Amino acid sequence: MAHDDPHHFEDIHQALHRHLPSEPALRVKALESLLIEKGMLDPKAVDAWISVYTEEIGPKRGATMVAKAWLDPDFRARLLADGTAAISELGFEGWAGAHFKVVENTPAIHNMVVCTLCSCYPHAVLGIPPNWYKTAAYRARAVRDPRGVLAEFGEIIPDNVAIRVWDSTSELRYMVLPERPPGTEGWSEDDLASLVTRNAMIGTERTLRPAGQGRR
Amino acid sequence: MDSVHDLGGRQGFGPIDTGESDEPFHAPWEARLLGIVRAMSRPAGWTIDRFRFVRESIDPADYLTRRYYDQWLQTYAALMIDSGIATVAELASGKAAGKPEGLAPPMSADAVTKAKRAMIRFDRPSDATARFAVGDAVVTLRNGAPGHTRLPQYARGRTGRVEHDHGAHVLPDRNVDGEGYAEPLYTVSFAATELWPDAKGRDDRVYLDLWESYLAPA
Image (cartoon, rainbow over all chains, first blue to last red; front, side):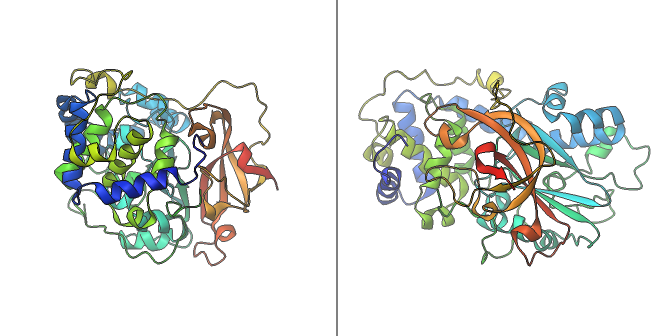
């Protein structure tokens, strides 16, 4: 560590806890004002980033990758062999996309992604993670009780299906390639992509259904 | 560091809130904070691992009760104080008593068009020979490093199997101070029953990415 005092950062955090405004919204407002006054922030760039992650970069990118993989065996092979190259192939470059690995569900295997130590997530292809992904409950339980977590999402995983939980402890980022639902033969890429939910690509949903045949 | 952030396998947490809306942000301040941290000027030494280490140092009660982006806010505030960029009083009031020197000017809105496509790599060229091969049985360290580390408590002192060799990646334990030292990184899988004897799925496995210095031959 850069500091001899082992409690250096704990002391800073406690001082911040005592002195910063009591409401998160007020804390953020004070931080933004301060950064602007210090010449460290252009608020128009903040607006631009919010627009990027609310309108442009989100799970539609991942869903496009999944639909392409369902339709094109060559793309599927490339996606599974080198996810980062597949990101570049589709022009989906972005935050936390440099070491991207896609893991494939099969009739015998179900994959599920977590980050127990913080909340690592493949932002370039899935955007902003859902709040539950960042909660202590999901981070604590996903590795130890994946079947219980999946049941809360409405998925009962049979005993003959093995679960693989991927704990994102390095800069590798994981996404699940779900199985293509039956009854979608002949569907277009766009129609297939519309079936692919964010949760299916995190692995908290397994069974995708054509519209009108069950929950979203 | 063995703080409360290391949550994997801890019990006592209730059900997951599976019914939340699909909106990326659940309050305007959350979106604002995300935008601020993507756009703000920052010293070179603020590596991802330094950020994580400082977040791990948040008081355990705050860590477990404050929302995610609120923790980010406090982490960046602490980094600013540590780097001499701001004081607690400035962060509390939002009023600057002085300006930092030596920082790049802030990102403009136009620059976001390029920055949103940026991808930071963490692999490094290395002449090191990988100590382990795919299929090898390995055992993890029994104890974690005193500072920042990415070997969770639930996977310590356990035997697993090497699944992938990713080449050399920057070692988080030493990247807190921006050292950039790299060593071989592997994906190692563990039987759920090796981690927790009462695991329900007898064939379930947990996969972690672990650096070579976290491992020994089994």
